[in-house]
Image 1 (cartoon, rainbow, N blue to C red):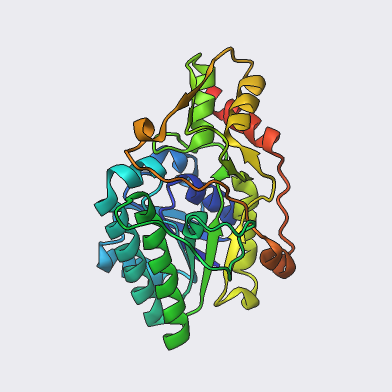
Image 2: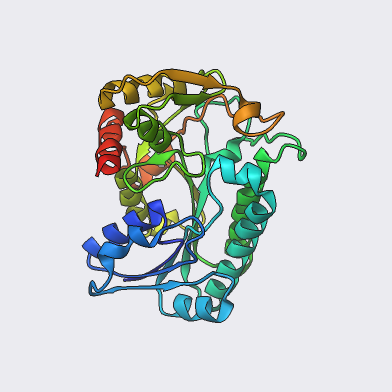
Length: 319
């Protein structure tokens, strides 16, 4: 098969490219490198079946041509990271909403399967944990820029489902939960690579808030295996799927695990949210997926344990 990966030079996109090429497929990447990196796909240059373009999805003639050549589109291009979302809310909204709109519009012309990468952020402040795909979503006030990302990704989901309902465009929506692994950068607020970098550098490991907030971390290898399996399953079309681990850990405990596994003597320092982000910042106290839907369909169960994920991130950053 022929795949187009928008945002394919990003952390998840580059691992997905590896996975698809290993499966004998052709992969084309479109990325403007705003948050991705050419280093993530440098090892794929010259490989049979691989090609890339450094450009934006807003270059519609190029996008249309690349979609025409593909059988499946993975739409991964998006504004990412809490820090970027808080600091650049206009870019967040415009990139996410307009990007999905142009991808879906051009894919619809040739009825190409589109996989929309959404996020666990859409569950917002819901207290119904673990989060189910059909549960109500609870976002904060519009004056809290933190929720702009969740809202923009929800619009992407609504738009994709509207194309499925009105035009029968085949779509699959995936809500990703704290995907981590090698090549991920802490530049935009991603917590695990930031902790590892600080621990290896002997710097204080900075935990935002009081550290009691919990997350469920999933290896990028498990995530891309799930993505590859979903596009092979016709019953996935028109559905929304959580992809993540059900193993929950407090961020303060994660910092301790990183310090232990790196052998670091770094202190763990709590940083108030208003200092890390902005005054009035609201966080999600827990973020745990219900993965029964994707497990029942394709048998998905995360295989890589958290300590092994941390070790891979440590090895990557040391290298």
